[in-house]
Amino acid sequence: MSFLTLENVTHHYFSKNSYTKALDDISFSVKEGEFIALLGPSGCGKSTILSIVSGIMKQTSGSVLLNDNPIEKSGIGIGYMLQQDYLFPWKTILDNVLIGPTIQDTLSAEIREKAIELLEEVGLQKVAKQYPSSLSGGMRQRVALVRTLITDPKILLLDEPFSALDYQTKLKLEDLVFKLLHAYHKTAILVTHDIGEAIAMSDRIIVMSANPGAIAKSFEVPIELRNEMPFLVRRHPKYQSIFDKVWEELNKNETTFV
Ligand SMILES: Nc1ncnc2c1ncn2[C@@H]1O[C@H](COP(=O)(O)OP(=O)(O)OP(=O)(O)O)[C@@H](O)[C@H]1O
Image 1 (spheres, rainbow, N blue to C red):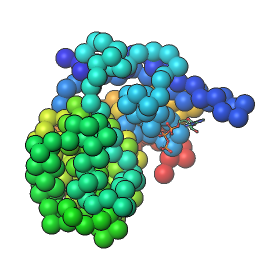
Image 2 (tube, rainbow, N blue to C red):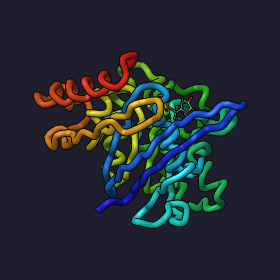
Image 3 (spheres, rainbow, N blue to C red):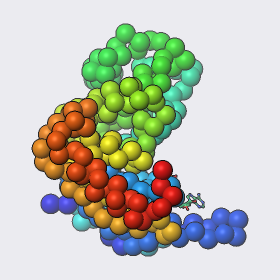
Image 4 (cartoon, helix red, strand yellow):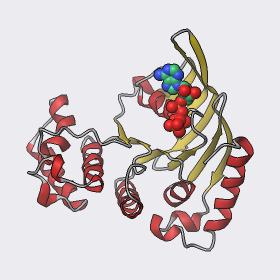
């Protein structure tokens, strides 16, 4: 059964007298607990989709539904993880993690305990009292992940969360995010330019084309790959074949894709 559904979503931007049709008739569904990836050339509207699902932006037309009802009426928690971690430099790691509950005025001893548990799960318990400036990029993204999970969002929107990291750290974080999101049964949409990352982490890949942003094709990741940790997916015998199909689709729609 579909959990999150986008139905005929269109979006136009108007700025400084210019008009951009960013999304044209986007329809897709995501099941509860499913992990999907959006891949496509720069400017095809991937981030616009996440902004609309998160409620930061309202689509020009069409609907975003959660269990068949408008998502804005659902009161569902949605978490966002971005390329930049946006940690507050003057707050400790633990206080950064607790920023959501603090703002929402829901901070409790239980949430504080949960934050410490989650920091332990990502290997950061020892730095809980330190400040972001003393942490590496990968550690900071792990803090951002915990900060996202602490509010127990039902849907996680991941907008190129590993793209600013070195390759080794990125591979390790892919495994960690995959492990935690599966352990906590989260539904996730990942925006990435990395085909390997999309295959390694998701159940399904939606390839988009640009001008205007539209869905070109959707690929189911073979079940054997979905059951593996991301790092191991890249060496699975079935990996190359799906990589080639996605690559072909991307190049069919955008000759300048790099
Ligand atoms: N605030 C805005 N005002 C005007 N146009 C915008 C705005 N935000 C995005 N656009 C335009 O809408 C289109 C889709 O942008 P979007 O950022 O969603 O694409 P994207 O696929 O996420 O790109 P990238 O992969 O480069 O991050 C682009 O043509 C972009 O220039």
